[in-house]
Length: 386
Image (cartoon, rainbow, N blue to C red; front, side, top):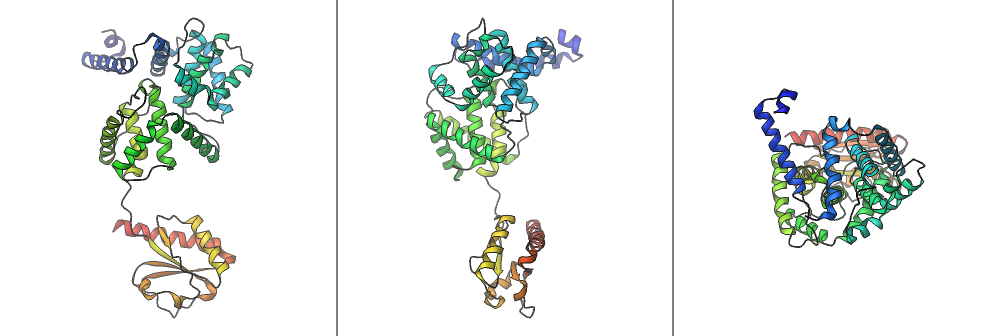
């Protein structure tokens, strides 16, 4: 009733909120093994999740220690050249803060298998180096191995937003190697998804990054506590989600160790990211593109330049090398096609039917390609609308 009086909400709404809170505690606390060893980790994740949802509690925290946690969090992000979003940054800052507050009297306990995995990882070693050499007045108790491990786990679940795509690829390959080597049952899960959707997924960075993030987030059950943005799913995405839920239930029979707990929001966000890969859009017919050039050097030059600028989803470049317009088979002129012709070989007396011809030359290649690209995408847009 105090909520009703203080927040000016109806009695009905206050009881609805109460039920949601009870559901949250049941889902989060009930999903953990009932072992005292996990109690402190559980407590910290829970209190961080509540602070992230409540300005009232945030205002009750020790401002000096919170500022110190902010400084350390920024040093860690700087070490990895990571630009974290505010929502995720708060989780890292708060987990560091509660390490300062609780590490002296409350011991963390992490099982040996997880310890080995975290300890041998690059992230743990880099964060340990930052914390031990940062010249900040950190409480000595927060430098315990288990405390650094917990901070490493939370950091790993932040989105990695580096300044260069190369860093992103390196991180993806590194995490893939570690996860697939240490958790063999993930291979089985990928197999089940590939069989269900009849697509090849291994090596697909869009799918695998989303997949590894989901697994890592769920393994530590951070998804039960930390904030994730809710999104609306289309009918197609909801259908993908239903099929994935069935697959995950089958996978439990093959899963080694504790089965990860997947929340609705995590699965929905995963579905949004991977639905275009699992159920690709119907492919439209590709426009054939033919190149006419006076010699092989020009053929290579034009072809490679066009491959850089044109999507393989729009056009299909003919493998044949044409050295004059007369060499092009007549059946191409009965359908839409693109003909790239060296300016010195243009012959306006040759009928090209439905084809569209574009002149090109080495000394004006960039301007010529711009015109070609605009025309191709206009043709594709028209064909998509018919």
